[in-house]
Length: 98
Image 1 (cartoon, rainbow, N blue to C red):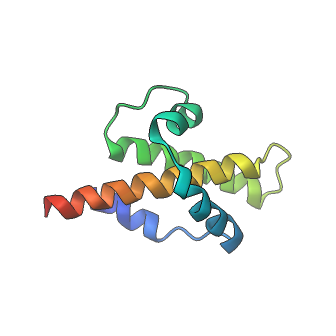
Image 2: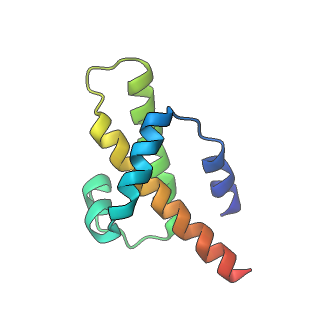
């Protein structure tokens, strides 16, 4: 699981996207937001969910970088919010286990 945390720490995104996601993280609700983003009830382990969110975020970022007409900044920010919060919770659980 620590490799997932290391991957997340190397992600580089525009400051405005990250700043907005940090603000949105204050109101994140896992039970409400994850099913909307992933399309299914999220009872899987945190590592699995983070990998799914990372894939969604990479796809959204690629659309952003290539000026794809289907890019949604709103969706990208929602994925970043979920990713930040899930990673935070994973780090906290890893710290407690140590």
